[in-house]
Length: 250
Image (cartoon, rainbow, N blue to C red; front, side, top):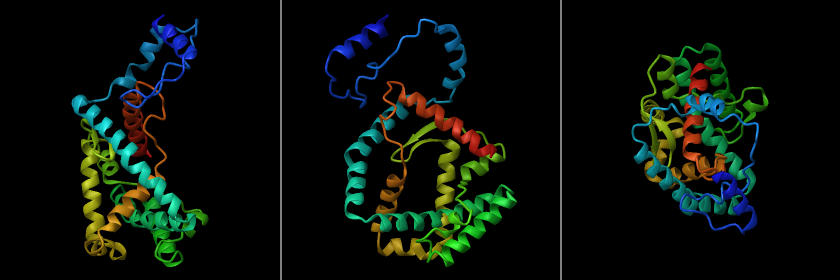
């Protein structure tokens, strides 16, 4: 009944400004289903909330921090980047950084004993590096060799290492203890290989780190608040947890 009152009130009054979490009138379009079985709903969704989150208070604060960082810094920078940079240049930048990430993809495919995927990623690296002029173009995808992301968090998971507690990392967003460790290992691996001399170049031109960060945000479609739900934190947590389970089994 409370939900119905809120929904009707929202339908009759102008939209208010976003609340402190960035959600605009999330109950405005709520529909009531008289045949809805609340007990069945609670039973079927109880597993969705069963995510190990002992640091929930910290994680929620970090989630809100990331939302504000995205709203005030990252998205304005991305909009400026798109405005001043021609589309072919943006595509070339994204292709180059994807080519760098294929080093980590290949190493983790090998560690997981994924023979076919390792061969396809090797072929992709060769085609894009040679035919694609260092990775600025992506002929491999057109040849039927799309990117197949693998990371050390997936590698650990494939060998039975538990995910550990859920974590929301500054700027990076949803993660867990295992995957956060995997991020560090992948970074160390990429830096030690120093493909294209990229990491040596970043010592002289730190702006390359900024370009990579902007490109990553530019190519990531997720936007905070796009679910328009007061339960977005729980939904993102559940989706991330399930997505990682699927990726590990792939």
